[in-house]
Length: 278
Image (cartoon, rainbow, N blue to C red; front, side, top):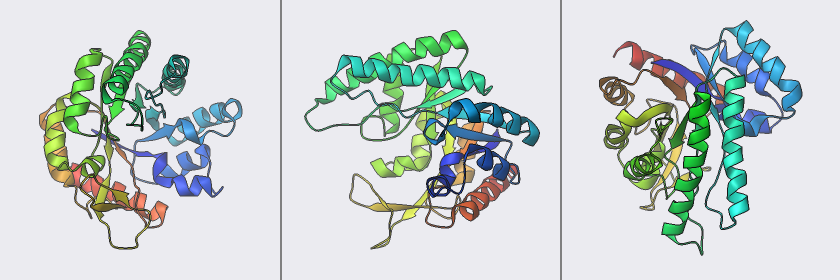
């Protein structure tokens, strides 16, 4: 297993205008990672930035662990859902351009007025179409546990089974399980054999007035924190992944209130120490 860092870890830097994709890669090169995870939401001018990104990756000797897209299939309009398939297929093409083998995808979430069975059917259909293209291109789609339709480990496992493609696996997000009231270690045990990518994220219980905080189904609130300083047990998660034969990327995704560069760097160091002790 190798450690990467997701650009989402520094999203506040990007949205404040202090960092672009090239800047992020150069920053990551000064940490202990071997790769980066890039996201479709961070491009300003892809035609201009793309060649610069490839050049910077080579200069910094970093790989692209995964390329993340933001799709949503819970849309009543069939043409709009077809566009969401294209969001993923364009992501597959971009992953190939970046020499990456994994595309992180979403399912979509429950929306008022849409029946659960309809929403799930749209998700399965869209992901099947996208997975067929990914398989042709030698790329794996990895569904993140996120939201109410694909947040729990069993939900992700069921979608993987119904999509039924060797090019469709899971992005195991260690923190997100807490938001659907699942213990991360127990949930990782369910999905470890399906892992195509891993987001290493940690949360701690939120305190009154802290923002941003994230609500769990139970009503509890969680706040992002440095890996190893929250609820997630990194050593046990790593052991489960190793025992399941996972040898892919561990992508740090820091979402804490601490200064982002400090929080992400500290998370990388703590995860590296846990991996070295495995």
